[in-house]
Structure formats: structure tokens, C-alpha cells
Image (cartoon, rainbow, N blue to C red; front, side, top):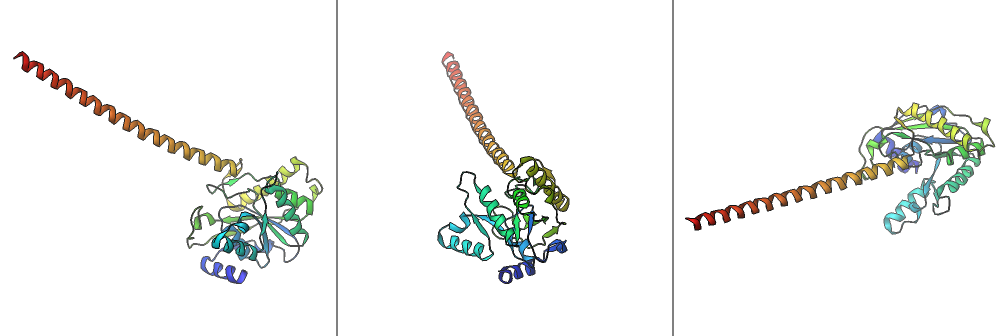
Length: 267
């Protein structure tokens, strides 16, 4: 898959990379990246010599039809792990378990701490579950990664990507061994996650927003819905005003006509 996908991808888009020396030649590590575009999971593995295993929602592997089979074949080919989100705690526990298994095999585990793509290019608060728990349970170093401009190549909803150079900045490994064994302490999980997000922010130069991206997406959707409803209400108000104006003109014309008829009768 690196030859079939990675080679042409690098040739077509020519991504630039800084900090490649921070990726260990062997042994386990966790790559924690910001998430701007669906293509992030293509560009990062393409520039590395080693395999990176990300988790992917199970729907990518179970969607019926030709497109579904092709999607499943691709994700299996690049070594992605399906995560069933139907459990009582969603993808969280499955992601942690999958991540620990990857790291314990001595491989690279990739994760997006924001949990979903940024809706507007800003960096959002990291979720304290998967990343921190895998790091503390395994003792593996966390390497912050910043994807640059990938949202401009393939914005949400766009199928055909735009040819331009994305960037990837890879930071120095972060050691959280001082917290090992404390993966069930929510304050420690929060501290570890915030430290990683701060490093990603420095690498990416993104504006940081201290709310979850899922909340921001909901707020944006609600704002868009409210705007649409406001536009609809405004159009209805304009129609009502036009109707009232038309009725007023008709009433005035009738009154003028009646007045004229009375004057004629009087003459």
C-alpha cells in the first residue's frame, strides 16, 4: 500500500516534513496528531518508513455495495483497525484496547486526540480517554504531530482533492512514565492530554479552542439551522408584507372607486 498509494501521493502533492528524525527507527510509539481532513490518515503514513496503525469506525468495513467493499479493502490494506461504536461506552474502550495491542507489538499507533475532524481549522480540546490511557498503560512515548493545510486539499464534503503541498511537523517524543499506572486518575489523564495538545498547538500554529470539536460541530450546525430558519422567517415576513400591501392597495382602489361612483350619482 505504501508503494501503490504512498508513492503516487508523495509524487503528486510533494508534502514537506519537519522533524522526521523524531520517529524512532524501531520500537513502540504513539503518534498524536491534529485532525483537519480525511486525507490526514494518508499523508502521515506516506512520509514514514514505518507502518502506522490508526483506528477507524467499523462502518468503513461493513458498508454494503461496491463502494463499501472497496473502502473496506483499502482500510484493511493499510492496516487500519475497525472499532465497533455500538457498545455502552462507544469507541472509547475499544480504541484503548486496540491501541494497547498495537503498542505492545512494538508498532506505531496513530490517534487523533480531538476525536473528530476540526470543523473550522482551529485546534480543539483533546479527549482524555484513548491517548492518555494508552500512553500510561504501555509507557510508550507520545510524539506530537501537526498536519498543515490538509483541510485546504480536501475540505469536508469534497471528493476530488486540490493539488497543493501539505506540511507535516513532527515534535520531540514526550515521556509520561512519571504517571505510569495512573491511567484511571481523571486528573492525570486530563494533564497528559492537555500537555500533548499544547505541543500540537505549538507545532501547528492553530488557534486553540477549549471545547470539544464535537461540541463545536453541534454549535455550528445549530447556528446554521437557526440562520436558515431566520432566512425562512424573513422571507415569510416579506411575503406577508407584500400581501398586506397588495390588499391595502386593493382596498384603497375599491374605496376610490366607490367614492367616484357616489360623486357621479350626486351629479
